[in-house]
Amino acid sequence: MNDAVQIRVSVVAPVCNEADNVRLLYSAVKEVMETLDRSYEMIFVDDGSTDGTREILRELAASDSLLKVILFRKNFGQSAAMAAGFRATRGEIVVAMDGDLQNDPRDIPRLLDKMAEGYDVVSGWRKNRKDKLLVRKIPSRIANRLICSVTDVQLHDTGCSLKAFRREVIQRIRLYGELHRFIPGLARVEGARISEIVVNHHPRRFGRSKYNLTRTFRVLMDLGSLNLFLKYLSHPLQFFGTLGGWLLILGTSMAGYVIYCMIWKEVPVHYMNVLITTIFLLWAVGIQSVLFGLVASLIVRTGTRKGGSLSPFLTAKESMRG
Image 1 (cartoon, rainbow, N blue to C red):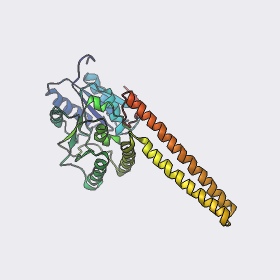
Image 2 (cartoon, rainbow, N blue to C red):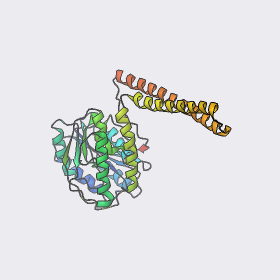
Image 3 (spheres, rainbow, N blue to C red):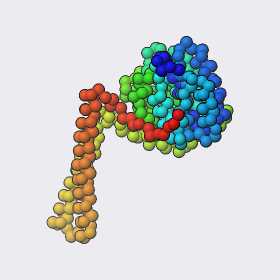
Image 4 (cartoon, rainbow, N blue to C red):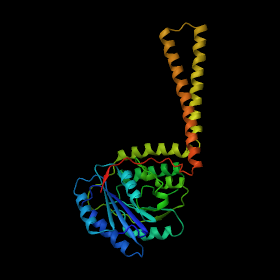
């Protein structure tokens, strides 16, 4: 398609070892998008598949100019794949979905209708989720509660990949780790209006799920980092200054104890050496924390004056080839 043509909707789907699903996914998305009176494009991102998915994607892209394919040399994870797809979009609205056919492309028109009400992000809610209870549903519910409490975005299902975004919002977000789960919260930092609709969810028909319990721990680690960023994004000196202040107080208290021991008590030399070393270490780290907070505050204020984004997003490290 000519780049001069205005694209209204971009559909982004990361896939990994979905050889049995990718043709069906392509056909289902294309069938739905052809019924809409909107120009569109499809972007499939292969996250290092080894089962023939890449060859199928190349074949589909060669026969359809509306399909763009991004191939990773190795597996970098869902967040990196989604980030690459988002950066390649040209549409005014970006729709993200999983590549395993559990999300239903027929829900895309409903997402777009909700977006037309003035929202910047519309998230899917898998109200009748077709997954295993212990391995998927329970960990997902726990993670959802934690994510909502940290990001202050009240959604029933933060883990649903089927979402619609305005391009100007999603382009400002940089993903890494498991941050694709936190996109609504990250969008809130940008001032986005967020809504949610109930969507269909189907059991997996082909292939194997990429989810395992170790991902839960990665989500929790990223959630801790996100919590820190959201709380102290605009005033980092409060965090680093407080941390440095407590370290300096602790070091000074230990110094007072050392002086007391030197005057009034007999203390072994090696014990005193350990205490003195610890004191200087606490003072050094405390001063560095305060200085780091000052530098971070200057960076934040400089970004604000220049109209830059204050969002704490990092660029995903990824390797691609077309």
